[in-house]
Image (cartoon, rainbow, N blue to C red; front, top):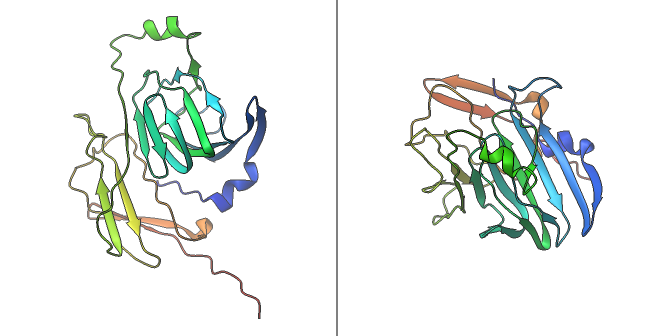
Length: 226
């Protein structure tokens, strides 16, 4: 069953804390109840300029989608719409927030206990059997001005069915997702779509038919003064 959350719906749980270089925020979009480890995770991380997140790793695969600002993740440059993928038990970082700060959405298919910082967790990392570390950062390129433009990430893929896409849509445009790479019939996947306006997630619905998933999210009309 698809799970949908908009920023308007979750912004009330935005948590702020002080860090040595300024301020940091976290906003949970999707999170499993306490004690449940099978649900997906989606949360927004934001920070003021010059914030540094130390090198670390996670126990699960994850996507990080840059939604604001910029910076550097290890040797990977970050800017809006860039996508970073890291396989489970892959050390990455440090993440250095740029002059305009940085905001990125983290997506995982299941619960994760959190960052395992290095060098503190080096021994734990070394004990992982058959570890296959890998990470990549790629940014979408839209070379057309059509109402709907699809970018297939050429680097974010593997022989286990990993795939990633980015779609650009003009206001009021409609499309049906049709991808050349077949998705596996098991496991979980996530799509991130940046919307041009507010939507009513309480009335959102999804319909799967003939191998196609159609998601309908009614727009919230702006109130204008008379």
